[in-house]
Length: 428
Image (cartoon, rainbow, N blue to C red):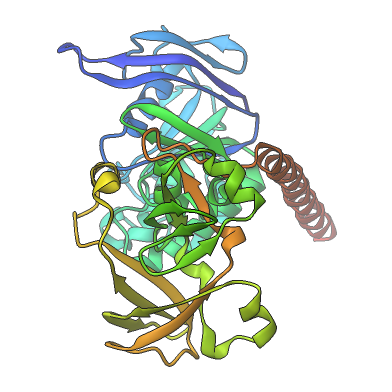
């Protein structure tokens, strides 16, 4: 295992296009870090520079304390898992997993190769498929074979390039847990590229959000969700995405398209002397007044809105509420929508209500939210004016403590399982 340190990494192509712009990132030994962002943000390019498949224009890359900018991929001791599996169709699962070991001619005996392959197969529940060919496997099984080939390398780090994008939704969910379990069990430093923020939020110890080749924020999933640094990160993290509304300051209140929010000390301090801001409201922070306790209703902001469309999903209900945005923030929000790979659809608020809500298409619904959970952004710079740096630091400290404890638990479990297996063999 090894740490990976990127310092001011730049990638410019021959035509001068800057794909990666001065990215600095410290990845700790044993850490699981996600590179995430919309299409074309530079995340796959950054991964390929780490593994050595792309040259680094400037900056320094260190793996395990050694500068490796000029090292060939084979000299970096990294294992990469690709989106398209990259399996050899004429070889069995066993031989596909064993392939990187056989390349190191004479370094491993046949018994050592068999032991390593079977250990990887047991880790990924592939033992019964070792004699099959890739064509006879499901997509999830093929991806596990590719992961098995990475495991036997005993590499310093695993690199994953959108490994689940070819799988259907159910398989993606299963493979996410498989990858998380494998990483915790082996404790191997892992860098994982995805455009899917659900994968990023569920898998990563920390998540690095990229936009147009620039690093926007690196934090734990919870840190990104609760304390984003700007509009882009706030809009990218969360499903459904955060709603962005124009907020006009009028005397002692913040006027939204369909609600008036009293200005408390927090909001006053955040807004300063601005007359217009962009307000962020997460869909899941809105509730149906009819299912709330009266005491809770009084503690928040109630508003009525005309619901256009609803979607009942079993555990929750989505309601869509159109609104007219303010012309002075429309351009900023249109630019943000493009950066987030949006479709430029109509301005609307999405709210996620409990499944017990009776709100339906065409209703005039009475809804509620807690103003303490609103975020306020500068309409010029996109900066999150309500971000609490102390709270963000505390979240990341807690996350690091949780990561270390999780690794220790997984490795203690591995030792117990190994001791149990050894005792069984000895008894036999």
